[in-house]
Amino acid sequence: MTLARTIIVALAVTLRIADCGFRNLGLPDLGLLQSSIYNQSEIRYPQSEMAAAAAAERERVVAAAKRYLTRPPQTITAFRAPRTAGGPHDFFSEGDYWWPDPKKPDGPYIRRDGESNPDNFVDHRRALLRLSVEVPALTAAWKVTSDDRYAAHARRHLRAWFVDPSTRMTPSLQYAQAIHGIVTGRGTGIIDTIHLVEVARAIEALQRGGALPDAERQPIRAWFADYVHWMTTHPYGIEERDAKNNHGTCWVMQVAAFASVTGDDAQKEMCRLRFKTVLLPTQMAPDGSFPLEITRTKPYGYSLFNLDAMATICQILDDRSRERLWTFELPDGRGMRKALAFMAPFIEDKSRWTHPRDVQYHDEWPMRHPSLLFAGLALDQRGYVGLWSTLKADSDVEEVVRNFFIRQPLLWIDELS
Image (cartoon, rainbow, N blue to C red; front, side, top):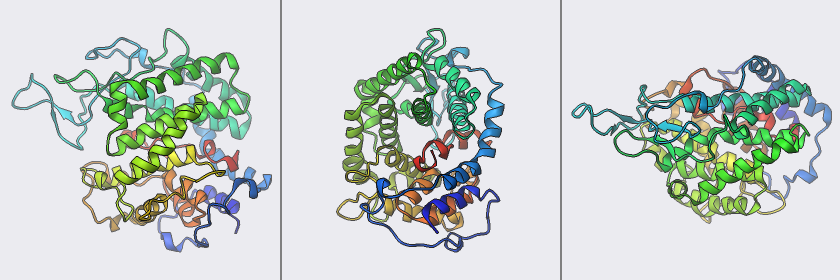
């Protein structure tokens, strides 16, 4: 079975083979190919196979996009944040795990790790989340149908968020994840814009397909250039860059994604170097696990989250003409192969997880994690692609949607374009 046919099978399996074990998916395990063999220029996928693969996602994508066509754009300016120190165009959120102090009800909040405060202001976060769900879906629907209505509606959202002076968001997160009585914003808040990563991918798809006029592309590009500048120069951005856990990973993922929109090769090269010299050495254990995530109160969910973020970095920055991030390894063998080998058995069978249960939402995971699909294709590991195909593609649990930031594979897999 060719890898392209495996992709088709995986995308077409919507019957959720829940009882099928990872080792019993019926797909051949031919081992890892050398990076020099898996070269885009050496592999050609027939158009008929690509059309079949796209058709497998078509029903899901188009059904959602049709619903989104009836929903007008709505940015953060539609929601007043009463506790923000910023203005109406400034994104505002509050630290998830901070609660009123029972001993001092009117005093500064206190931290309860892993327990989200339901009374926090979340309207800006929800607006951004909606953008991240709808624009990629509309763009993916445009790709598989060539129906310009979907591209046109995606552009309406992009203009509202990044161009229109009356509704655009300020390209900074100076007031994100504030803590009542302590601070008006934190570098930690930069993680809130992980939901612009797939929006950025959609922008690139629209541009490549000739569906994003230059008059719109230029101000959108300028917005992302301004945001990358803020992320890489503001003290909050530096603080988040230097975070030791998934926050540092997501900073690299975001800069890489947004620099791809702006064509900033210098920032992309910085991200490649940081992945190899900072993220892998400081976050990954010899067995491929992420100790800083495992010590948290949601070790399973955070491990999946960090793995997906690292895999997305590789998918954005991997370059088959040079040393590849997917196959890069530290001298002791740590790398993406090791990370997937550690986590995949626990995705296939969560009951094998040897660490504590997550304090919240443990039963909602796993989802159709992009790390499985991306690594399965990049490393020629068909079992990962097969496992990916058995998992849920969508969730109606807000906490899951918020931590599951890659939802449209048709925007990410060039072989399906």
